[in-house]
Image (cartoon, rainbow over all chains, first blue to last red):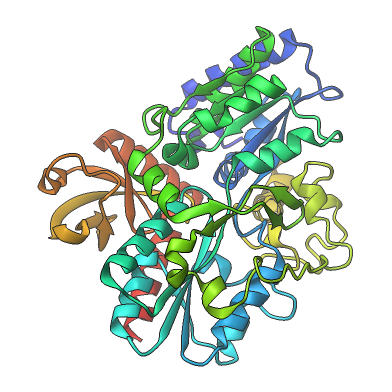
Length: 378
Length: 94
């Protein structure tokens, strides 16, 4: 095993793995009856696969890969709507590169760009603002996408546009939130979860209290984690410690970056700019109450849904998944990616059919990227 | 876009808009500092921050910055973020 060279601190990693094994034995976890721990964040999923943590931990610990990859949970209808907006005369449609290859019903944004739509990849909503200043005669639309790590940046960009009176800037807001889908998963009677690894950078924005309901109402432990491999192992151990001691609490392994109360400036901008939608559609998970954000009426001039009359609030346009696509079942932990009939055949990172194959944070892409090498090593 | 990348604030560029120049793995990029400003913005010069899509979101120390950058490189996320910055610069110039 390449173990030693893979970890910056192999000694600490070995000690954590041994402690995890002791705790797992102590609570009677086994391959047949494992403890199910969901890592919510796609960045954690990527890290777990990159370091093979799922194979290194005691066989009684099983990772369930959560819904925390924003492009993976983006319904095809939203991509169709982006393309519809981008094709309007005079529009410059801007997006994070992550969304470019997500398949819509007939095209991805990349394909729509090749077909002539003015679609530009930006690194930041501030780039979209700069384009709006540079091209006052064009309508610059920014695709607001992602969880609480990116919601404040979009909000701050809208506030800046309002201060400058940039009437040709708007946001196609499809931002989503982390706690609500977890609530939905916990209410699902088919879901058997014993604890959670909480997202690091999302929690840097929202703090740790939005997860309190998980411990209080569902009696499940949650540990907010950094994404270095030893952070993740430490957090797994903290979850097992809670289970062994009969506790269910929200703990913070990543306190060096995550303040208990989150980032006040970000939270103020989020509260000023957005309100919750009554419900929002997630690819593979369906409608989830209060899980999406829309732009408040006072910023309607910067709301692309209002400006173009296109989007979830106007018409839901539910699009069925491609036939046989198991993204939904994978995302709820019911099946492994390799059980999908399309995995590695009609669906690869180069030509994704389902959204979980698009991003390196999607469970299928992670299986694909690291699976081959691992099988060879075993 | 989900994971922040560490950078060091090297100069203020537009204090009225809370904009500063950051150096991220040798690449210079203008970032917004509204979320980390505490006191006069000049006080941030030389400090390490975690940058998410052009916004400094958290102050971190140098050791944390180095560890995070190393972890991001191993995941390929640092290279991806830098590529996205370069790609965006090209698109802006189009």
